[in-house]
Image (cartoon, rainbow, N blue to C red; front, side):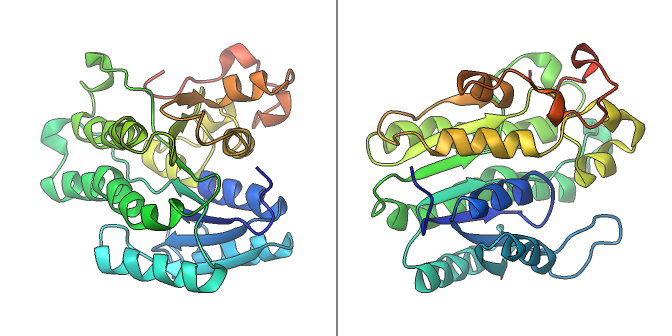
Length: 274
């Protein structure tokens, strides 16, 4: 797909992987809609929708920043309507927004459980549903959700049941909607082989040193780009892994994606659910 004048709606793209994907697609000519709730700087996380928009505009991209809490249906519908009014339609949806708390059952309060399920599973479903009427009008519509393969092993649940339930809920949206809209809209998931160095992950795990053994968000952006170029009628229902997508596209050297070039590839820390 040629991304020139295509419109990409991305949730949670004020920083990290979402912003990296937004910048990649903007550099290819896409219009970008940033739907995220960070309008004011977070005390511990850098980036707002407006700083993200400035970075995208600096690359020559057209961008629409929208203050959106994807748990709020009215805010989602308003942002989708504004995107369509501004750019004429929606061609790609990136379900990137996600909430994380890696705690056990007794340490996870219900308000945090509700947050993760409201953002991850429900939010992905809601935004997908809101964008679908417009995606169905596109000539190569894609929905790409940043969620893991459906690997239902107890080890991925035992230490953080609530988070895993919510994250796999996003993957179930891919499973169901890929079948429901087969031949009309592509639904795929993308997940990193290793941990990705983002401020949100550093905040969640509380270990900046661990991120030396991580890859940069750009590997996910480049993988997303390769997926979204494909024919939506043929490429759907997949759970892609970032470096496997790039290897298929001909990439042989993954060293530039490492946060610390001195760290060996074999020493990189695998992400959850891999």
